[in-house]
Image (tube, rainbow, N blue to C red; front, side, top):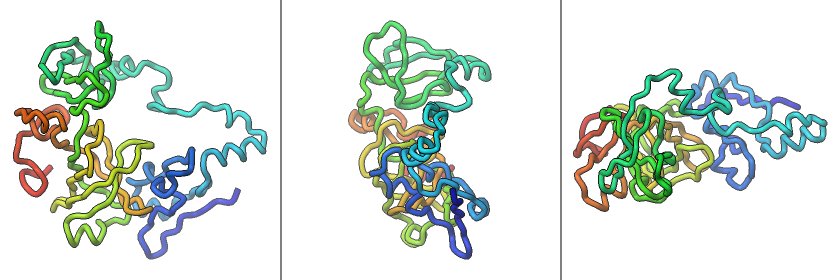
Length: 281
């Protein structure tokens, strides 16, 4: 099969239509190559080969079938952490980190529902397996100082939804922020932070230190610290930034409670740190 070379020449590299999920949402089984490339440098991209070009997964499997490569067709796809394999995730992590026992606490009434071996074993939005409870509970916040994991009783609980986040310094694929963002300090675009999730309309606010505030048009479920927000404009992947802060949840806003407005992994930041004011990260 002829190799397709991505050449840079004198202009910044842009995700071509064949490499942008945002322009291929109707094509089933397309690998989201943009989520793999959004942190790659221009220097590396100039020397990058894409042997499969814009081929979809289904078309590649068809080629494999025509060439009797049945072992390719029968190979199972990896949906988890590749190097962990079929091992229990909790047991695997605890081989490298010391247990830090803590409590599962209901966000609604502060009731202790059970215990766990470490807050770092959980991510926002996942189901918390709490012994003795029939109904499912979901992780909505983590307190690394106290070791507590706050949980809510439904997968669509408002405590799981937020519409504001702040990233670290953004890596722009074109090596510099879009001109409209530099000029206006704000720009409409789309973002996502998980593989295969739908693009979310948002507004970026550029900070002086290269970080951005991301305000989603509607609240998003299970935004999590440490993940990367990847930005898109039209059919182009613009770049990404690591999520370092989260705004208040819909539940906090609804209740008007005094819970922290902004959450940081392992601790909480108080009120007053919002777009355009407060300390920078």
